[in-house]
Length: 294
Image 1 (cartoon, rainbow, N blue to C red):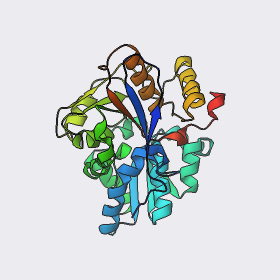
Image 2: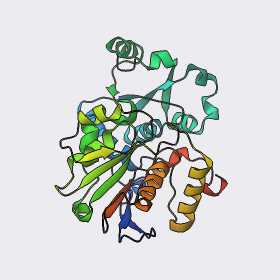
Image 3: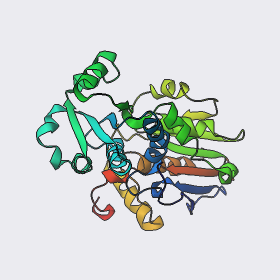
């Protein structure tokens, strides 16, 4: 059902190093202008399943700047679903149109249900989900961040035969779905490295629910203070990377990932002559300002 607007491709990054390391970025961000990167992968089979089961409504969860919320709203608009977004933060009910992501989702047809942060933590509680069904009727449920078995299936398609030359596959980690799909499609000689955007080690357990091998690890040193936190050093890196390679990175995920990988190269983390592939997972809708204005 859902089709890419452009095929992803691997772009070589001439990052200076004395170890003969080759660095590439897989441009998943070009798959779709609004449902890009890992959101395209996660939604692909979920939309097919929702259509197969004859659902007309999609319901999901997210915050005020959620790439996932934006992608689900756009997918609903393009593929004939009504969409409902359960949004963290009841204070947003009166000012969601001031938030670019929510304003765009609203104009793409998404209906909002604003909750307190306490209520939002119950998003997987059967009683809470029952109350949502009583209010909105039947719907196809897509979890926060989009991660479920069908999302993993979609993310398993990120790597192709052309990517078998790489030793390390590196990607950002939010809910753990994208890296789980990548782990499941690794070749025996490959290792996946995840760079969480959140503090804490809880993601190890989340990924183990879906990962089918142990050829992976999480690098937890590059969250820059936590989810959606950014400092001047990271802003400068984003500007440098765009000016040198004409690739826009987002401040929440891919900038921290790419900074981390290049920092590890500089510190000698990777063996000489390693071939490294960074997965650009999109998420650029959250970057509302021009890269030069950061």
